[in-house]
Image (cartoon, rainbow, N blue to C red; front, side, top):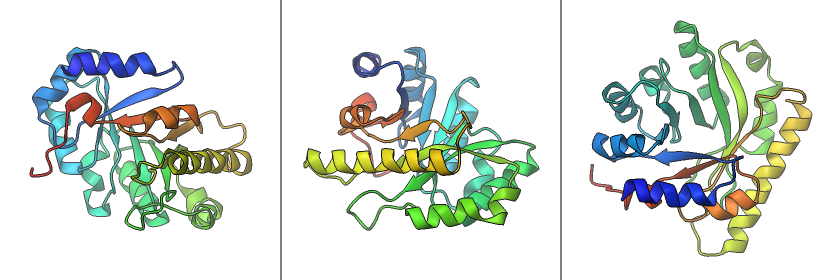
Length: 223
């Protein structure tokens, strides 16, 4: 079923949108099945789980970290992570930069913004983002590269609300592009949309969609 699910989702995505298969809590065998069906980009939200899967699976996989990243776990993923979607504080970005320097890597990152109604979700607001990007500390960072933005919409059946939040994230992206990343081609990613709302996200300008249950089935929260 995983192969068929992937094919269905890919058929709905324009060429400008990249599918991140969200594989958190799923066994290596499921990821291997998706890999065999041509999927090469996987998203995880636990550093140790991602490290273990990286060691068990083919080395041409691109690993995206999509969850809340604790600073004491950064070291487990820095040697191989392709993109960190969830930079939600200046301190976290500094810690990623410091760890990446130890491995002589430049790690691509997205700034995560709080666009939802729920207070439980992580993310920067525009004031915090400007403080970060204007800071001398950021200007000194040689081992991280900001490639765009990420956000999670409110978990609701109200499509108008979800669309409004995705529009807001696109506006944030455009503002940052103009004010901080003009002429920098790497700043091009808008990571938004999950299994239930990714079609709306695509309509509103997503370049990365994070789809899990629509590929792998319902998540097991007991692991």
